[in-house]
Length: 260
Ligand SMILES: NC(=O)c1ccc[n+]([C@@H]2O[C@H](COP(=O)([O-])OP(=O)(O)OC[C@H]3O[C@@H](n4cnc5c(N)ncnc54)[C@H](O)[C@@H]3O)[C@@H](O)[C@H]2O)c1
Picture 1 (cartoon, helix red, strand yellow):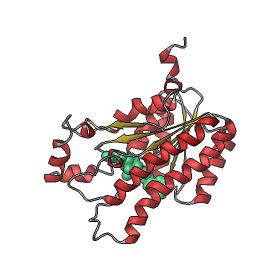
Picture 2 (cartoon, rainbow, N blue to C red):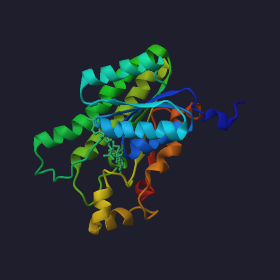
Picture 3 (cartoon, rainbow, N blue to C red):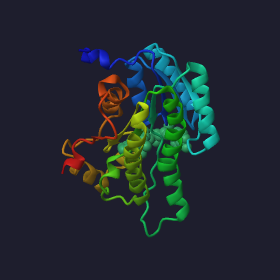
Picture 4 (cartoon, protein in one colour):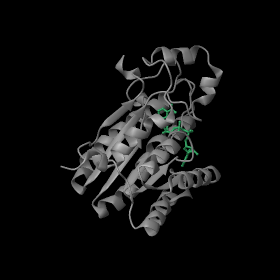
């Protein structure tokens, strides 16, 4: 029987992390590099992506570099996949992670604002999964890890963010649908659904404090936000052979929020 710790090793594997310049994407990229993978940080913010890639390659002694990409642009996504295959000859793992939120009341939200969130959080996730998925289908292997959110499972309180919640619920069902369609090609497709994590996206809210943060933490049995590195274990598991029977699943990492 294969040694379980051996199964977690990612030496020589090639990973694309979208939205990997900062926040959860950066932390997941760091964890995957620590397990031995080579990393492509694919982000709209090239200078920060380059800094992150440089830091990872220095710290973890793997190949890491940055590619500028807007994940909502089909040609840019195609170019990203093409250049990674040209460089490494394969793509083993996709961490499909870029996302954003806009907090607005449903009755006040402009249609443009709704579409902006859906375009990045759902259309972008589909576009990258489809483009990289085509490469993986040809290879006959690959692990796709979509970042959804606990907001795809529950409606957050008190902030009003229906576009975000709907987009993340879409990512969860997209994950299940792709798992159903692509299992036969040897691909794994799963999603990580984080709770409140302290990143660039949420730091302004935590810094401001007040009623909203009291509510967030009051409904989190562990009583604290997650740190980005606390997604390291689950992403390495899903990227690696250790998760060989995980398929179409939602991995909720939320300090217990959705347990209530
Ligand atoms: N922070 C949380 O509490 C939390 C909780 C649950 C889920 N999430 C999800 O995790 C993911 C990462 O969130 P985060 O908190 O690290 O966010 P963040 O804002 O810290 O980082 C997002 C990254 O995505 C990049 N990006 C934005 N638009 C892009 C585009 N069009 N193309 C390519 N890259 C783009 C940004 O440059 C940035 O590097 C998102 O999908 C988010 O919805 C976050």
